[in-house]
Length: 320
Ligand code: VAH
Image (cartoon, rainbow, N blue to C red; front, side, top):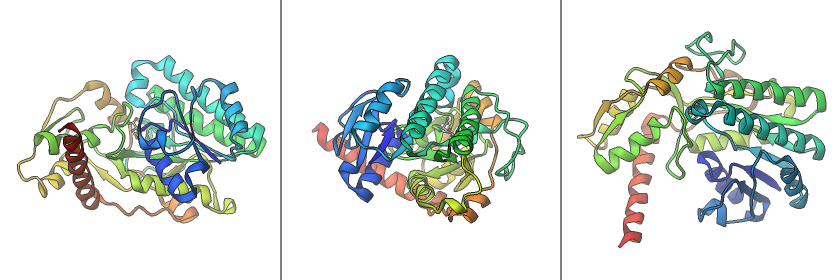
């Protein structure tokens, strides 16, 4: 069985659905700190789990005969910056518990890093797989520490831990949990609902982005890859596009010609975004385990707008 932590988050929600469709509903134990009525929470085994409770995590892993942990529970960059010590406790406490559970029970483990693991002194364009990582956010400190801790558990205890450095993820099922790249999700919703969007990230601010289906495919592909081919463990650079707000607006206007974009820059999230790369180099992932995204900006925008319109229509139907 696969245990997913943070199963009701932006990635977890869709990862649970994908894994259950691939391996069977009962094969995936979804856990999160709270329950809701989402498909992820109701389409198979679900347990409440606060990842800072290591005892409970081990108990559940034994009870459900788990062989893989996909650890996604974390506080993202913007919320972590607002409560840095809480973020340290949740992000690092949760990770240590996942690694300890994996070590004790001999589990395979996935946990993501992020482009947030890079900082102002990292080369900004085509950021290499191996380079300077001195982030200036608590989230980044958690991600770099996490990368080092996972590699330590791999070399010291032989835990089969794997990870990718996710770019900003764009999706329509579950909202992102307080990140810096959330503007790239909000812009699509507002385009459909209001015909306009006020961005908290400034024009000309480039960041790597990826559509959720490519992110989920990358997780499955990495976890199923031949370990002998993996030159890195935590974590591989992966990306699908490097864009700035105006790029999204231009693409959206091909579908909604009157769409208007303006700016009310949030200094906190703008400074986080400026400390991250403009574009990262994901050659290692492509060479070691065949990473290859299938959604570019055009294909993502077409799918995203269509799915959001559908979602709002259904909600409208429910409301009647
Ligand atoms: C965040 N969406 O904004 C996350 C991610 C690369 C960005 O780490 O914090």
